[in-house]
Amino acid sequence: MEVERVCAWIHNESEVVEAYNTARSESMSAFGDDTVYLEKFVEEPHHIEFQVLGDNHGNVIHLFDRECSVQRRNQKIVEESPSPFLTPELRKEMGEKAVAAAKAVNYSGAGTIEFLVDKYRHFYFLEMNTRLQVEHPITEEVVGVDLVKEQIRVAAGEVLHLKQENLFQHGHAIECRICAEDTENNFMPSPGIIKLLAEPNGIGVRIDSYVYEGYEIPIYYDPMIGKLIVWATDRQYAIERMRRVLYEYKITGLKTNLSYLKRIMHNPDFMKGEYNTLFIEKNSRMLQRSNGNNEEIENIAMIAAYIDYLMNLEENSSTQSPDARPISRWREFGLQKGVLRI
Image (cartoon, rainbow, N blue to C red):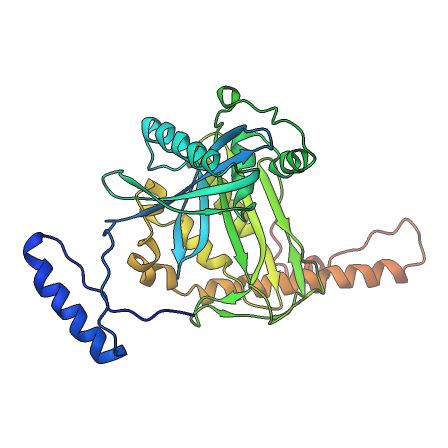
């Protein structure tokens, strides 16, 4: 059940009394309860988590950090590793604290210790997720460890063979969550049948998904239909690679957040790594900007290419000669009109 609350921000000691009385009064008026509690105000927070792995023999390690601050309504959209915000010293300290927390509860298996880190790089424990998370592939890409395999080994009673001193982060990885949703209509879910699916590939590209052409996205579940992960030698190259594969990723038959993710990858704050959990709120207008005309032209081109493909199949199947090669109707049209450029 969601708890309704009245919030009052206090920036210095002189504001305490007034804010306390105001919060009590408004709360009593709205909810019939004037209970007040205090919590620390974390300025410009970053949501940063550390992957941990423990066995049944008391061994626990961490596999470094993931920056998860690109969020909408507390739901992660883009994650990256390593975090562009952490210093090496802070990364080391937070990793040690994550391991200590897991050891304190005799944790076994894969899990995540989550922190909030303020603008001054002070960090605070948020929660622990006792499972493998959606964004675990970027850790696998950067650290070079198959977390699923290690989790199975631990469950089988094996001693953790990984040593903290042998683990390092190599390069940079970014993950985008591909969702069936209408980003221009308050992110409403967009169920439907996938008509065409063209997934990108190449060096440093990974897709974790379950959908295929003809698959029907139901209305009952989370709208995420896949995870697009890229790895590169540094952050700049990873961003460039993610831009490319987002443009190569084609899904028709329903609406997706692909264009929204493209705009994130071109956002100046994201490109500089200078963002926090307020990123979406701060850049909402720019990120919501419609690319309707460009997308319409692109969709028309895709339809034309598909029609051409079907025509070629028909031509090829009707020819008498087994050596005959199909000629594109679009090429033939261009030759007839004298407009083809080679």
